[in-house]
Length: 465
Image 1 (tube, rainbow, N blue to C red):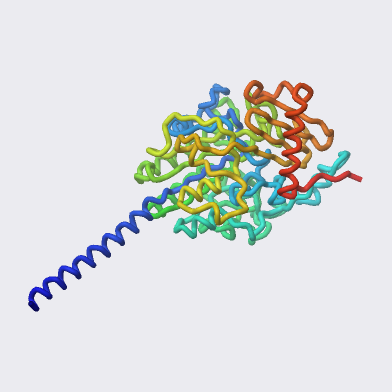
Image 2 (image 1 turned 90 degrees about the vertical axis):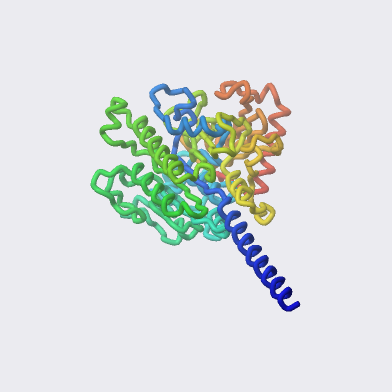
């Protein structure tokens, strides 16, 4: 009997050990299944400034084109603002620029000098906005860190205070660096809206100088590769925010020669090369099937955005519609396309759902998860997209607000009090103002836009005395 009991006891202990090992393995496997996230945010890349758009034949982007061929292209992707800082803040927080009180780019010359310059001889003063992202806002990096992710920020931040051109290193206030918003690593991110130099020495307090003449886009690409290599055995979130293709336009001589001195096209090729380097690193590390890659621009381009009109700084399509590709091997259908309008506030809830976190715990989010679209499902809520930009620009529709609902887009210009209504399905170039033809549609969109502005407590422009 004792012998039998001993045998049963041994069997019981072995069963427990096997069970524990299985439990540990399952837990480890679950952690491994959490997808890595590579979010590439390009600065000022226009809607048609990529090869797959077939609008500018001299643009060469084979790596970005492959990213699109192997993934999903969003034809109606928007930035939350027609300038950089607000869009970047909306990505980090999942909140609209109007709600964040950060509706304009943070001025390198400093707030006081900027407002004096922009308000001169204008009927309305620029709407109030702050010069940094508030520390108390929950960031997507904070949430991902709680889920076991290593978080890295490489490149342009531009959320860290005004007056960066008056510094020697781009640091206006160390409290407003990416490391205080949930990022474990910050390489190159500070208050700069554009680099002091595209060639080393960089005069960047968060980026060590390389050899003289080293090109910034290449350097940030190399830093991204090192980050992937160092963290490939665990979940990571890499936010690669290139300074390119923002001015001042500059590129290596050997690349310039290929484009007869066209600096912009040369910069795009260098961007493409480094996108290719990142994708090659993911492939070599056997991470492609467990990494979602998002390629996106922070606002419209400066150098023509065919077939759109307008450019960076305007509420026309050319100022806010941007190139966007999402790639995830084996999860997203190859060569697929999505024409559902989306915007940058959608990324936060998308990444939450991606890693299994409920959006119900984050009630201030203003966007929608894009996973149903990425997975090819039709269940996606009908909604309107909104823009509030109470700021002056010299060209195109600015100092105004806009709403898109389905095929309709309505713009109201504060300074002139003019209204614009476009049917984007028939008129992507916004050539035909339909306000007089569709007065009821105009009225409904105008009222909805005003209701949203009141909801988010949007700052309005005031009379300029």
